[in-house]
Length: 327
Image (cartoon, rainbow, N blue to C red; front, side, top):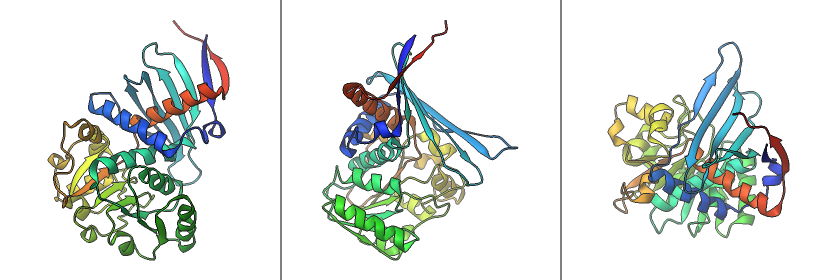
């Protein structure tokens, strides 16, 4: 029998800070740059039902863990997703934990964005324009604030009340001033860092408005038909995805820019992990525009799961259950 720790979202809440997640995810992407295996998300629809099943997995040998994420959602847009995150020992193969990923999900994805900002944005970057006002946008901004001294943030989302509430809440959390703006153009103007954390199927800003030297982190590029970034943004940028394989299968912004004839597969600069290890040079000049395309991988998921699992063991929280072994 194997003892497995079950962690609900209530258990996960407060176990780690945004900076903790950033440190863990940065280490994980270093592992990926050194060859740690990770698969892009796999989507399994069933034609006679509305449910869609998604899963992805990876191994982080230096951390000594492996696992991934699995979740379902409705193809018609109804309902909500629940994230189930199993964590295994990479040496023995034994299960360590099953984690409700709802509380962890924004922070681990936000951490991936922050790691990319640290690797690709200019060292002087201090202003942010953010698109979206939900939990993912908040986590992205909180994580970014751990690796850059932010001075000013502008936020745009279609609903005035949502963006103003976001600005009020984040003003209380950050030392930087956070202002809700009425147009996408205002969010891009004078921003060193642009973050898109939306579920928009169409581009959320005009890429011709990007300032020279800007960095863009995009979250909503996880389906071929969905794109937060237009072809102008992709064609103007040094394009860095989380996984090259995912970019060629699922990254809507890149795939549609390729279909528009403005980029080719050779314009994928390299994975974020390769930038961190130095195998691929990131930003070559202060004037370049860089893009990090983040669609969700097991790299950040396994790292975050390992972080909260170890904290839970230290605090002795969670429910312990016994799993039978099969030989």
